[in-house]
Structures are given as C-alpha cells and as structure tokens.
Length: 320
Image (cartoon, rainbow, N blue to C red; front, side, top):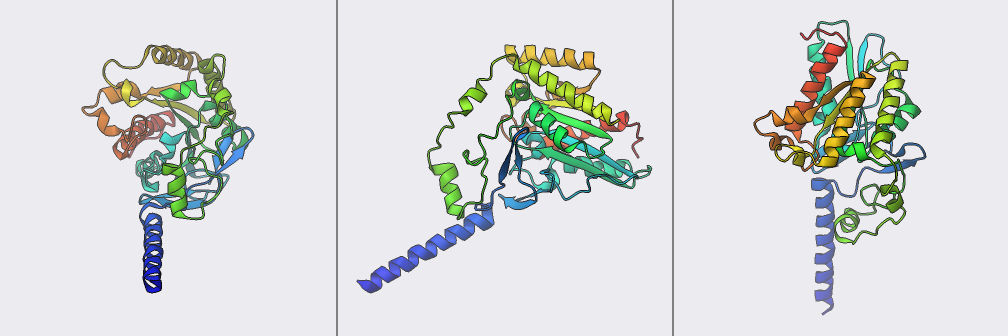
C-alpha cells in the first residue's frame, strides 16, 4: 500500500512538473507583463520587462513603451516618430515584437529614407491596453514627445467614448497584474478558471457622465497643441471595429461621433486618416482582424503602410 501511495504521489508530482514546464515554455504563463498605477495616466506597463506569450516576444523599455531601450533625446541626424495608442498600437500577446505597427513602420522607413540625411530611424510605441485619448495625453504630459519629428495618435472608434483614466484595475483585474504569479498554473487558474470578482468602484468610472466624445476630442486637441509646441507634426489615425465594416456599418451613435471627429479635425486643421473607407475598399477586410477590434499581421501591415505614406508626405521626405 505504501509503495502504491509513493508511486501515485510521484506520478502526480511528475505530472504537475510537466504541466508547469509546458505552460511556461509553450505559452509563457507564469511570466505575464505587469502593470503599475499612475495618478494621471491611470496605469502603465511596468518598465524594463521581457516575456514570451504564446510564442510571441514582448519587450517593454524603460519608458513603458513596447520596444527596445532608447535614448531620451534622439540623435541629431535621426528620424524619430512617436506612436501613441491602445492595444491596437501595442499589439498585445498575439503580436510578436517584430510585427507591431511601430516595428513594421520602422523597418519600412529605414528603406524609404535610405538615401536621405537621416542616419537612424526610430518609431517609438507608447501604448497600453484600453488606453484612451486622456491616458495618451497624460503620458505625453509626463514624458514629453522624446524629441520626435512627428507624433501619431492611433485610436479606434470605441476610444471616442473612453472614460477617465483610472488605476483601479491594476492588481485587481487578472488582465492587469501588478506582480508575477508564483506558478504558471496559478496564472491559468486565476485568468481562466476562477470566477472574476467585479471591481465595484469601476462602475462609477464606466458610467462617467457628461459629453465623453467632447471630452476626448478636447484631449486630442491638447495632444495636438503639445505637439505643435515642440515643432513636431501631428497625425491622427482611427481604425474601425470589425462590425462597422460593410453593411449596415457603424451604429447611429457612432455615426454622430464620427461626424463630430471629422468636423473637429477640419476645424483644428489636423491631418486625419479614417481607416473605415480604406478597409471597406479592400477585397477581404475581415482578413485584417485578429478579433472584433484588434488587427492581425496583415492588418498591421495595411495600417503601417498608409501611415508611412502620410508621414513621408507630411515630413517632405522623398521615398527611395
């Protein structure tokens, strides 16, 4: 009997170890990206992190950007673009470091400016899941634009209705952990098996009263103003939700918000790209999406190419 118990215990322990190692090596569980709260920004990805999730490499630098370490001030002969955004710009766990919009743009811009006066090209990626214009404005106010010649604000339709920045999810929502779990199995349990507790205080944030669209447009105007103060160019880009593609198209409240944004960009003289017409004009727009809102590699390539063309024209750079 004792021998049987020992054998069973050994099998159970062995199985536990195999599963733990498999979850870590194959899927990256046990080493999630962690977040930190910020009074103005709401939350940031904690600086100086590296991990691999579902085979995709993710690196966060010292300024909580998705990317490699950088110098605060760019080289005099360098071209630097600052991309601000949410999970679409960030790319999340489903996007390898080399396939984010910023990485794709940087590689292409290196080729495009090969015969120009720029000896170095950087596209910085300051982004985090569920950020809205007010989070992105707060980031810009805290860190500056890193001496970028152009700032690109990448939003999606939902961001027009984004709420006030808050740090409430950090350490309480499993999607925003503030520390590493003790085991990969513990992370799987917490994320996918354990019933999630509602964060009651978030209800008040999510029910924020007033004209949210107007408040977010005001935040975009402030981002534009900060960009102009530093003599940088500003480009606003908006991607649609998958359900907006084709018929029946955006919902009534989204049509009104979109029109307000269009009128606003004309009044503010903002260089603006609305990707809804671009996506609708492709033969298979559904093939650009990872899910209902986020883009896959093909979608990232599509968006990065259009942004690059606009930047080259705005910065008066001839493509070689």
